[in-house]
Length: 119
Image (tube, rainbow, N blue to C red; front, side, top):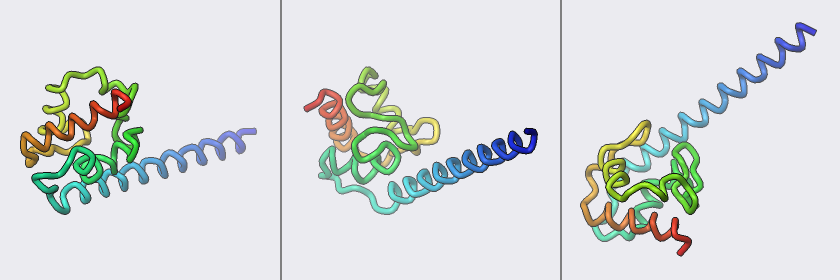
């Protein structure tokens, strides 16, 4: 019985290690993608999200490495000023995007709000 329990613990540890590796890889890919080429000054909100955010927050804003941002997500109740600060300064493992213009940040937030409103 002890051997079976120890075997299960080893399996759980291996699975946890695998999940951590996937998370680190996804985070790395997100950083590389976000830093590889700056978005166009005239990029739309969806274009900005696709280029800078989707690798961590998911193509459908469902969340992956980063939290969900779509309809019904906790971010839907946060004020725009919080989102601006999070985008500009970064938060937790999210990098800062202080290179974005005010217009780009506003278009990105407008896109998030449209999705969160279900439009």
